Image (cartoon, rainbow, N blue to C red; front, side, top):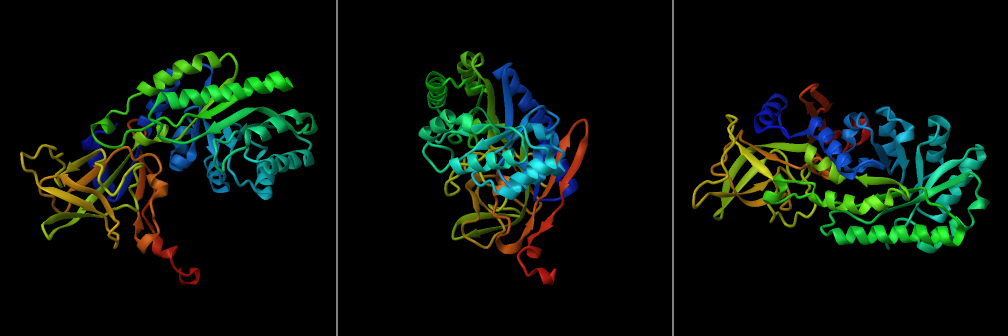
Length: 403
């Protein structure tokens, strides 16, 4: 993880609000995950978590889950190897599939979310006289994937679709799972489905792609210690399955979260009716933590004075507490309440950690037409790279003929 001194230096050089993505941390994170799960397991990065990381991740021998035409376009611009792409998404349109097949030579794997999607993929493949690899996504009881009965029906009639090569099944049921039992029961369920398909229809599932939804700690002291304890426990349950399937683990948040920080500067301070308020030049349009409720939870942060010194978190027995608010003109723009940061002054900075997943894309960027943060990446070997300069959303939020 980048030092406070390096983060402060980069913030001063690039101005705030600022996202910094640590490419060294990303490489270390992926390397550690691979080492823990061991051989026979492929890591698939769900790029929805942070598409800016593709530049670094494509060098780290991972696959990429792509869920929209826009995400696929990013992969094209980033020169991602098409064989490394798992093309997912509930709404695959014909012209997008045709573009993938005709202009890009296809992808490494297609997932199937519905019977009609299966038939559309088959139609497109048959028209081109090609055979494409697919995974059937099993639903967990929501709008995603296929009902188990439909999975069974497609497998039982697979000889009617010679242009579709069903490699196995795929499943993702959600994120931030706190109990290993939840994950292991899902593995047993999916393994059971594959056993049933083999017993009844002689279908040998070659691949099992699963999104475990391992948790990332965002609040309190635990947020500074995103250990691999649960992953290590999960890896033990994977061992007996390696002899049965090629296993692909789909991860987004678990890979990306720790490699990003967000830096925002103090713009103003005030006390209204006895409550201290600190206004920063960012806000909830840039910072979005999973599980943050009414700004009551304290995310991992460091308060840095304008001279670059990190302020201690122990300000005495009666520290001044400040509610940190952003620059949006809405009472909802509160990041955290009653933060003990002493006496903030204009030019001081707050560093928010574990911001590498989702915040950069889930923030309500366009609200109130404020500028969007600059984004840089840093590695000790390569130095600083500009990924995106400040963008001004007033040009998006107005008539095109005025631009």
